[in-house]
Length: 326
Image (cartoon, rainbow, N blue to C red; front, side, top):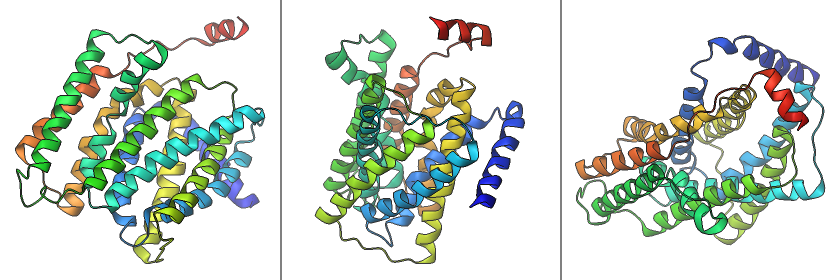
């Protein structure tokens, strides 16, 4: 264990020293995030989706514990309310969102289409902010919502009406329902996170989020799943990728970007996820898109671009310390 912790600590120090050269960190994060939809396609061929995600959660927890030891930072466990809040957020973010994505792909929905539909969560979050919290939308956000809605209508219309009978006529309705579950889970967790009181460290918060997600996956696997898990080489490689590349690698990049105040870069580039996932699905699974679907997808991406947040200028250490004293 000490050797593993030392290795993680050395890796973290190397990454920090190379940070000035990592202008591509946001893009790398988006690319890693996009591979999650491909992993869903690979993994659900040998395992029931909720059982696969449950296994992932149980494997990630000790890995996060090792990372927490390797970072050698003061622990921020928060109070009981904050821990329960993070568990609830994990039930929505990792449970409903990831569970919905994997279940949709397992039901037969194309991975690229799944990525496109659930990528609407910034628009849905903005729409829900108005009735729930009275947050007013500007003209660009309204335009983004309209553009995204038209784009999704074109994509779904082309698919459900069978414009391309070779690729879209067999879309399962249950897959679209699971996409809706994922979309609402992501948007709800985002709104809850913004309003949540109490603070935990990032790794500590993730631990409680994965605990909450594990509870969701246990119940889901028992109710609608089968606990099927065939440990083929393909499945084990997929599980390793989910844990190492996404749960650890992508999250580590996110932590570094948050420390540097570059989280807005991820949000601004998040509109690249649907085309990246669609391109990967085309290369690996030969998923085809009809011309009307491509037009609709372009409108969705355009809506996400319109809704992207503005970059905030980085504060100097003096400004940050003054803000902390207020």
